[in-house]
Length: 340
Image: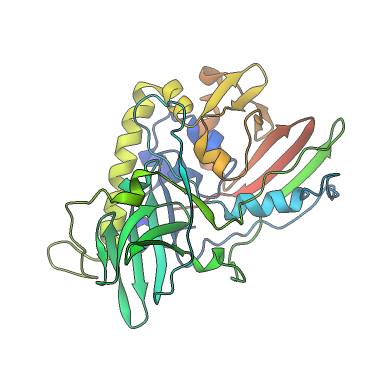
């Protein structure tokens, strides 16, 4: 649950079009599925309350090559923060420059993000010791200390004195105490069972578009104050950003649901939806090309028209069950859904 008072009155059923199939698919691999259906992932502290109890039907042993078992997969799913914004038809990802970026030493705290497919178009809610949280867009200066360069689902990139630094959510830092509980997952082996389970990346090496190293794409908006008569509070501005993104994806979902699926790199097949090499958001959070989402709430999926019937049922429930297949192994997730 995203604890935003102004969003609490926003009912999912009233803003989601019936044809948004992506809400069913992407919901299965992220806790914030109702936002993912619109292409935007919002992460706001305090952390979402995860109430699903862990009930392992079958404890998966470590794989032969040292990969994590089903527990690691469930923890990865609960901790992932994905984002994206439908736009033009997806193309092969552009090469990115791998830049080693340290965690910033500035006394700042990342409290919320609206992250989009293009990290140069996002915004963030950032505070610090003795400071109220303020709303920033890419290109803004943070309290006169650093420039906001990119916004990702679980971190932002800053430029300070010409060097790139990372500001992450505290739960994502080494040694951080995550307030998120695990999703419930079970695994049944079929075949060799040697496939690695998806997991969250712990590397501090981040992929950054090459052009972000030489200069940021500055926003016309200046750094806002925590509260102002004209612009409202920082939190209200973040919520407005979210609503605008909802409308953009709503229009795409109504006109071209198949294209929206392709935007996320999901391909309909006779046996579910296959993750393709263009599913950058999913791959960045542990899935791999070739993985298949085969069932939603025990119902086989893969036919866009038929699967539309699942949308209302999923939205009416407070939990979703997803079946994912990888290299002969089957993983099942039971994930609580956020409410607004």
